[in-house]
Image (cartoon, rainbow, N blue to C red):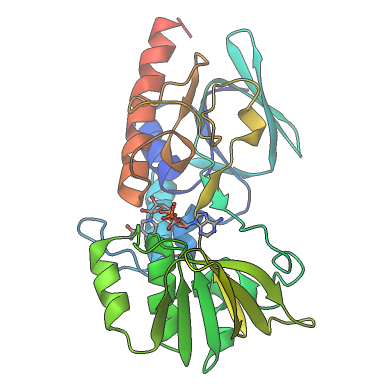
Length: 306
Ligand code: NAP
């Protein structure tokens, strides 16, 4: 079987592409790494900026996207993609199960949590070090935790944790947040959030569980010890572009080079959502990419006489 399009990933970009492809009557397959669609928003406590869905949980929004795709009869397949190959005009998606074939491929594998790369981070991962406040926050009720980062996710995590934790240190390496102004205001109003500006976590310490962190002040060049039971790392994301790095052009951070039309350097391969070079990585821009990608696929199939 040669599909018209195989969509890799089932976050907002992949699901949006699936909905558009199915409506365009393309023979479509969505390959997802685990049998749970939604991508990064599954870990997002609240998505408050998707029009018409104010205050929805990320999980619910992910489920709604999936229900929509299911209702249209989209075919899903759970497998780990290991490589994408070009075989003339046909593209081959090599997975841990088998090799799939398609006339075009939409890369919608998104991105993963970035690490800070300090001693103790890996050793204490799952033992107090977490990359998902909404997944693990409940374990820290009444405790003192640190959130590392200054973007939307760090601010949202700090607010989320402040509801249940006794104290939240929000440690940012500069003296100005990157995250949305509305979140900054909320963070500054919370009494149990203490912002540590110009702070860089140098080390995470503890015996089988997080006990303290060493925070370096970038301006004064001093170190301070903070007793915390949890460290939530929210320092951004890394694109999941490894399996295509041989066939499409990436930028220096590993994002697949593509504009709004999602066209990559490789004919027939399109990149949608957080995996591609873009100004704003949000659910709404990912969903828009999915729609654009299918339009580009349709155009490609005609132009390439496929
Ligand atoms: P981000 O916006 O890239 O922010 C990453 C933060 O981590 C920055 O403040 C950065 O500092 C800091 N950082 C990076 N590397 C670091 C290191 N090694 N040590 C210490 N700090 C480090 O990432 P994000 O917050 O994960 O958000 C990812 C994307 O999702 C963004 O586009 C965001 O807008 C979007 N998002 C949107 C929403 C929403 O709209 N509701 C919610 C969540 C996420 P600097 O500021 O100094 O670079």
